[in-house]
Amino acid sequence: MNREAFDILIVGAGPAGSFAAERLARGGVRVALFDGRPEGEPKACGGGVTAKALKAWPHLLGAVGRSVDELEMYSPSGKRLHLQLEEPFAIYSRVAFDSYLRDRARDAGANLFYEKISAQGIATTENNEGWFIRSASGGEWSGRMLLGADGANSVVAKKLAGSLPPAEMEVAFGYRAPLPEKGDAPAVIAFLPGWDGYAWAFPRLDHISFGIATAQLTFNHEWLDSQLWKFMIGYYLMRIGNLTCIWPDKNMNRLGATYEQVATELQKTVEPYASRIPKLTAETWAKRQTQGKGWALLGDAAGFADPITGEGIYYALRSSELFTACFLEGRIDSYEQLWRQDFGNDLKRASEMRARFYGNFLSGRFTERMIQFAGIHPNIRRKMGELVVGDQGYVGLKGKLILSLIRPF
Image (cartoon, rainbow, N blue to C red):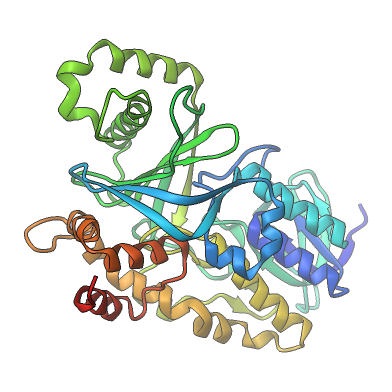
């Protein structure tokens, strides 16, 4: 079988891989982009794209999605906080969003192959000056450069940079469910009672993405799935006026048959999904290698996700932008230094803050106190909104929160 030759081989056609493929192809680079996912299979992701990302790359608005300028947040005890966002963010179906970016890459001239690549199918060329890959179907391709953009379970990263331990992974799982027949369909984030992590309800154009993200090391599917079902049922009951708190436990005595009816209908319609998200420690951020001779990692494959929220789309796109600029300008060795300067310090800071974020503060859960304070102080509420949409990073956050407290209302 003939081996096709390219300048760059990109394994993974999610946001990071497709964004890089488009920019490289527009720069005259011969690119092979490999998508190994079953057609139509989405990543387990809320699909939220921050205002920061939309402002950086306005063409993302071309992907059909839902714009959100309000958000409901719930503390572990069920206290509600309504956030009116100064900058809207967007919620996309990951099938639609990923297809949009993949189509842009193909239209720019990237060669798209629907082929699954395994670690065993990746090797250096005979002269050790490039790479060749072989798919499960027997196809072969060669290139001067290899990019790993194949997510948290990246075969490229495992082969070239080493695997991440379970302690540095999160699990995200959930269900796609129908939009409510009655009432509105707000975007919701609810912190879990007695557990590190949160649940989300992100309405899309034709369905709602419900999910939970939590640490893999302490993952308990049975308990978490029961919490997610309570959360989903509570969401629908609130829409029809049967509930005032997203967690229905306190109202079980009077809900009775209504609760069971909603649960039965949901069981007929929901579609499950699951995936993993990197959650690097500060120590790993300091030493993680994301490039070497003839290779580099992008997005989740490099570990580029917020250790507190799990958000990774902005970092997927930004890492691709930084890498492609380095490659096209002939300064490829600068990539590692650039991403560390650009967003690495913020992700490292988030790693350092995670334990405190899901820990205790003033005799209660920090997430409980955070929502409590935001409910009575508009400056704290405003700062939280900026954090949600990506306009406020973690570096310097503590000082800004303190300033928000002492400023007049």
